[in-house]
Amino acid sequence: MDLIPAPRYARFADGGTRLAGLTDPLLVAGPGTGSTAAWIRREIGAATGWDLPAPAVPSPAEPSPADPEAGRPETGPGGAPEGVRQAVWLALRPDLARTLGPEWHEVHVTDRGVLLEGADPAGLFWAAQTFRQLLGPDAYRNAPLSRDRRTWTLPIGDVRDGPRFGWRGMMLDVARHFMPKDGVLRYLDLLAAHKLNVLHLHLTDDQGWRVEIRRHPRLTSVGAWRPRSRRGHRASPLWNETPHGGFYTQDDIREIVAHAAERHIRVVPEIDIPGHSQAAIAAYPELGNTDVTGTVPPEVWDDWGISEHVLAPTEPVLRFYEGVFEELLELFPAEVSPFVHVGGDECPRTQWQRSRTAQQRIRELGVDGEDGLQSWFIRHFDRWLADRGRRLIGWDEILQGGLAEGAAVSSWRGYAGGITAAEAGHDVVMCPEQQVYLDHRQDAGADEPVPIGYVRTLEDVYRFEPVPPGLSEAAAARVLGAQANMWTEVTENQARVDYQVFPRLAAFAETVWSELPEPSRRDWPGFERRMGAHYARLDALGVDYRRPQGPLPWQRRPGVLGRPVEGPPPIV
Ligand code: ACM
Image 1: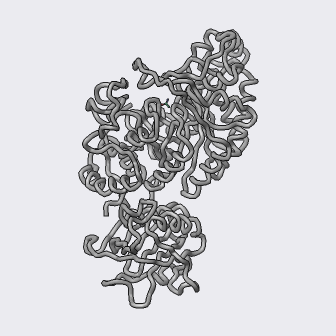
Image 2: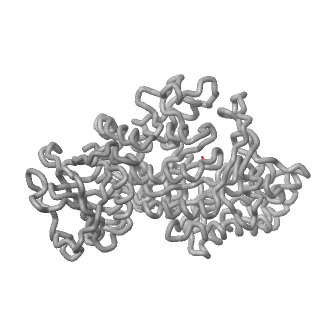
């Protein structure tokens, strides 16, 4: 049935050749199933033209948690039994949660309709995603293709499924190139279609600050735009002289968070400290090392790379960022994400080495040189967040100087940081750049647009394994899951982001959802075959994915230099 990600158990009658035909079903929503019922009415209803009315009287066929077998539609040959209106039944099955775990679900297709059952509301929502895949690619459109009522067929059978990991994520860098709010909402829909449940939003960097902070308005009035951008990677001589910018208002963020929550997706915000802070320093120069930079503050950076403008290690800077995080915690409630990402990556020490204030601070705090200043920043916010019932997560550089208890690590420079953190009892999200950085090129060919990094093909991503060999059992249990990261220096708009992300995100989704054998034994030809059906879904969704044959003419960027790295990526 070409489901992606592949389900744990699926059995279809006569190999999927026996079809049920749905024409105008009822929607019978059991207790606690309202949010998925609303989603089905809105999304499946829009694609199919179905009204999906509730039954006039409670259906005797409605399954209940007490008796989940009650009314389960019988599988039988032919169409719906005479006089019985077909239905889509929704039910919660807490017994599935007890026996199998969170997010598990079942999908049963019979002549009488479809029964979707979730261990919990998230599981039920993923069941609805499977239902949509079974309906076929047109179920991903926003309107029916014809005004004539059509019969939607789907294979008769049963699916029982649940995820391997609880953290199945994607990071989107909206700082280097801003993605307008509608694009983020669309990406949430795309994540949901792949049963992914974390969106990590990289909201700040040297090149832009993308979230409104009421008490510090210059972060967006100054920090959210730059007059020009380098076109291509650092070595490119080209510039795009069009000003670039944008930011999410606080209400935009609330809308994004609510849209995500309706889809059982957590949004993890990232405010990067103490490096990658040039846009903030451009807005408020006193955040920077003014005894080094003098009276000329930096501007929002128009180039790519790692800026030397990092935060000054002072108490007023801590207070400023506490204010930022206070507003952020309100926008991203703990139910949405207990985790708050503080970055912590790639913080050059050069300004701190030259700053008398920073050197004085090192002596006052009694910390171990400039490295000690970095961990002082991170430890401060680790405590500050813990005091507010939140958990800090940061890039693996936060391991330097010792990690505070409760902090979690995004392992990006390979597996090594994640292994160290997990063996020390910290939670880990694996996102090694050698494996799952989707900004890296997906083919070695000369047509690849602005090629950077290693070649990571669709097959390479399909063979990504979140838990590296050799981890102790206790440490392996610390791997919360994995995420694919999408940095946007050379992807100037949504179409370019789509091209890098898809189809590889589909392969990634399977590595975090499905129970796959070890990488060398994975059924790549089988996945490639299922992708045939999945490309049709992506087409209906309007995703500008990379075709297996390579970029379409308008997906190329001839003459724009990237920064390819030769040879196979080292697995570290
Ligand atoms: C990173 O790629 N600098 C986390």
